Length: 540
Image (tube, rainbow, N blue to C red; front, side):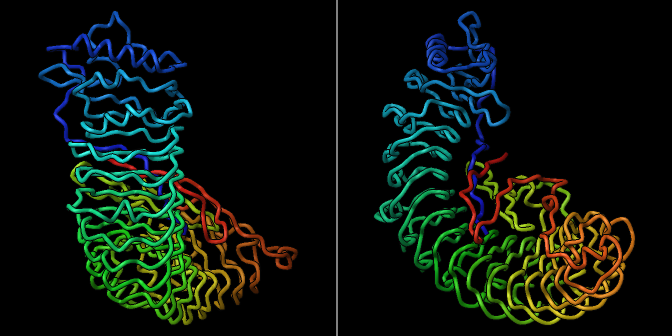
């Protein structure tokens, strides 16, 4: 799968004491002049975004996007990022930014600045800023070493056109997002040769051209909460020193060329909530200790690898697991009947739709790409609402256990392209939140259960190419699907006609799973790999 989609936009929750538009002591005159110089170098084609930035409007602390210190009146924050809507700022970066000596937060994200290299003076801002976000623009060139920041810096340079190697960073940096650029080379210089323990908590390097092995020098990076290295050209094995990452909660390595077995050293990462190794060349058996030592897991993504053997029963011991994607491997044996113990799948979440992890500077919002109906959808803001089991394209045998119908919170169930036999569980209608069911290309027999017509949220169904017999249950639900959902069986009744029973297969289509809560970012599957993704979120 497809990445994990690494889309890393950053939104941030700084615990600041700064207030917007404080009337006393008011805006400082020299800083008001600096802001007017900044506006002069910007292009606001709408004349709306910076309309109140004008000489006659004396209190610049009340200008749009400006925040000042409550006591001194110094400008401390500039929020000029415009992720929503068509209105954007263009033009150039102004050296007058350096005149804002108390500036700690600068957000220029998702604008349309001129395609140019960042001027050298601009990087001097990182020495005192706490938050810098210039993501989603057209900046290019190399990123210099960033060793001078004294504050705990959150730095987001994602979704630009930066090239060259990874920069060296200061030990004070708290979060670094360089995803979705064109950075290349090895990670060795960036990760290794560190004398002191790093304070970095979030590292996102996905969607670049990084190559070589993942270096075996993670001992100084024990504060990391989230690592995203997906959508690169990394090779080799997972190094043993990952055992030092005892605070790690989110690990995304998808869409690389990594191989070997999942090392037992990872069993030391007991805080993990998200584990996504999809679309690599990992092999061996799925380690039973994943279900024993990594007991907090919410997401397991092992899609499109070369794992073999049985699905370990220990996986059933993960009470928080919501997404289990083991598709496109060489797994064999039966579907464990203990799957009923995945209690998080027994109900539908109605609360906040994000899966997020606390850091000292905010909440890291996770994101993953899930394959539905031959299409990859990126989920982030409603990820917590998605509950999925995908065991498709393996060598599983035996019957579909009746116990699976206790997972009444599932939105998607995909068991296609295996060697499953027996009947479709008669109580499948109890899984009334299902939006996607794919049981195609197995050896299932018997009739379609009448209860399946009770799945009123079902928007995608594929039962084709089994040994099913009898009449398709009548009712409004199943008759809404195309005949391609039922081909290759001995079925009759609407929507099948005499001609459709003899026609060639057409892949059924439907809306994205979870569409009632998230339209998602849609990407076509391409040989089990996907295009580069972009962006992750920070949230309050």
